Picture (cartoon, rainbow, N blue to C red):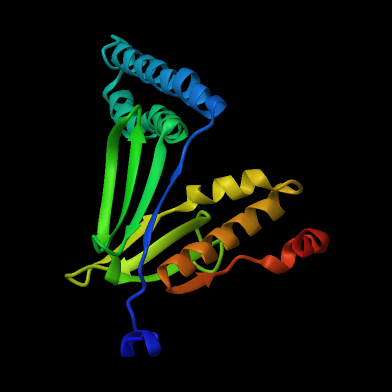
Length: 211
């Protein structure tokens, strides 16, 4: 036995890949409801805007007000498009010691729409946050680290809790908390880094926690 193996100083070897794939109902709702709705709402707003802007009765004050409201109105179709794309996308996470990287790909209809890649040695922690926790904001599960130029980076892996969430039965809040916590623990285990979580496990129903 080598001295490195004896003293357990051999590098942590990781070759891990997993994907989150939308269900048939999620894909159908995103493809046939949300995304088409985004196009229809966007088109309607554009035509209404043109009609209002060039209407003979429109004053300069009205036109200025319409410019101010444009970003708010544009948020509606953009939000529909975002959530529609999210529902039909497949996310794949790859953690590889041989390549020395941690990568996440977002795929829609077989085409890679977004790809992130960071040095594996820069991974520092797995962060798990509930809604409006000590840092505020939306609940999220992220892997965080520092790049070669000391820049901070973060990969959102919140969707990777979904398979565990769907496996469980019971109160949705209990399932949410447990799936977030356990998925965070799993990634921290794989990456051999600390888990920083503010999930309030004490609020999980006692019988559910014991189970």
